[in-house]
Image (cartoon, rainbow, N blue to C red; front, side):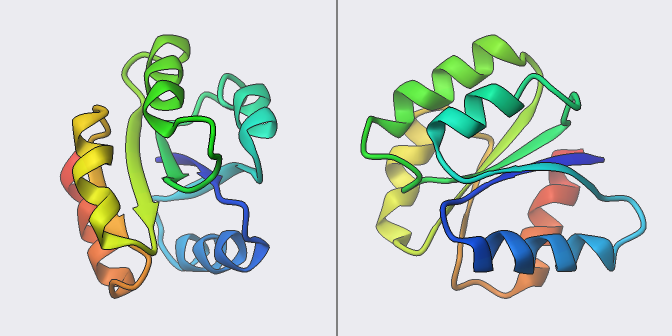
Length: 116
């Protein structure tokens, strides 16, 4: 599974990359650190899954998620946030799943596996 990581914190991107390097079936194809880099990279590398920091921008993540769906139909989107209360908005915006950044990494891996 090819994964695109979008998070404004380099430490989070690094930790996720290390987590996926330890797995046999996951490959990080690219990283984005803001909305501009996300939209320039989302079509490249043909990712199967986007890990999207729900606080990546204050420009409206629901609109961004909808635009990403238009650009790459069929790509899974998991919203990540350090604010568990963001889950309701993310799910309402149409992401496939939500994982809190405070959750155990195994929860993220099981969520990814449940998507396919």
